[in-house]
Amino acid sequence: EWEVLLTDTMATQKKQRNTTALLRLPQSDNLQGCSPHPSSHFENRIALIERGSCYFSWKVVLAEEAGALAVIIFDTVDPQSTAVLAIAGPFQNPRIAAYLISKAKGQDLAARLELGGDIEVVCSWNPVEVWYGLPNTSSEFNDTLTLENYGD
Image (cartoon, rainbow, N blue to C red):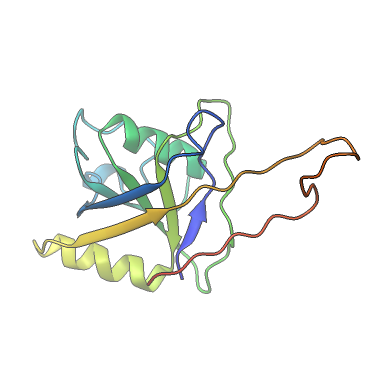
């Protein structure tokens, strides 16, 4: 039920990302993560951010600037309403992995964090290459992209 956020750029897409870290919420006045976080707020942590109010990729950029190793965005509607989160917006692309999880799972994780619990999360991201605009004579496939995610 984890959905990947397409964040890789040509400069970083060949790197495999595996991150294990404690989960952390934004400050209570910025739960949707659309405003800058205090410096180092997510340092060596994985951010858990609520969906809404701004681009997915903007949330990730801001969390990355505050030291996040990865971002988990939880949905605010049932059922989960997006299959793959695409990067968009008039700003730099994030350079860390991000995922979308269901409203119920996100609220459960947030509640556990609010009670003072530590939650260690493992995120694994294997970037894929996407080719487009290839000449018809290219031996590379030019019309299909398959993404697979496993986890819960």
